[in-house]
Image (tube, rainbow over all chains, first blue to last red; front, top):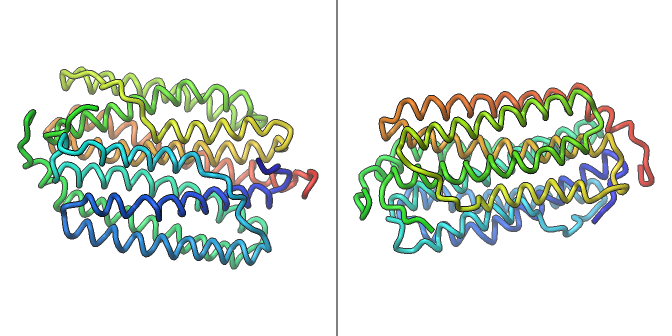
Length: 172
Length: 172
């Protein structure tokens, strides 16, 4: 585990955590997209996957600007969130399709909120360290995470949750 | 794993997840509080622990009103977040005290964001199901999580991160 003896060390720790988190999302998100039934949700998540690949590239730029590399430590928080989302997929026939769509939104909003908290802290550290280019890159990602979260809320309220409510299954 | 065949089932799944999350926070938070050096942060987190106990009691009320019980399934997302926070504590002498305070804020903001996402979805499901008493209880907790997150951001910006920046350690 890397030692933390300065704000720059702490910032690098935070950035490495986000690097691992984004990498895990890029690996995990396609499985969730494949399980989605609703076309709009599928499109939104595919766009989010592309955005996430862009977020990882931004982190590469940030590390380059700081003259550093990610530590390679696995983000345990994101590992838990991905485990949680894959548990949903393992439910198979014990969850009806429109309900699975709603549950996937809930799981992904947890993932996005994790990133909002992480990028919020990382950009503050960069600002304090006078790393304004890095701060701007992280702020751009933070903005996109926030927008993605709002889009999912709108999709849930306008369509997905209503369809989930109409699902009539064994215990409805 | 409980089957999900209706919006009520999904709501109960979400509430059970939050029940496990709050229980894990009540268990994990005292260890983080014990590791904090800054008095204001320690007080804020102690108040948050008391609030968290209140959130669990609110969830008990919600389950009572719905005539149901939590599933007992462990929230894997929160388990990952708690693991991540305890990794910080395991750093021991390899992280200076003011930097540990800043890192603890970052870890707890991730935990609060998890809850914001979860309560946001759960209250929406209750609203749709016409469970207005439950929705009001969940909304009250959501509001408090949001306020706790803002308080930590203020503490970080006004004091903790500045002290962290002044920490001069081995690699500063």
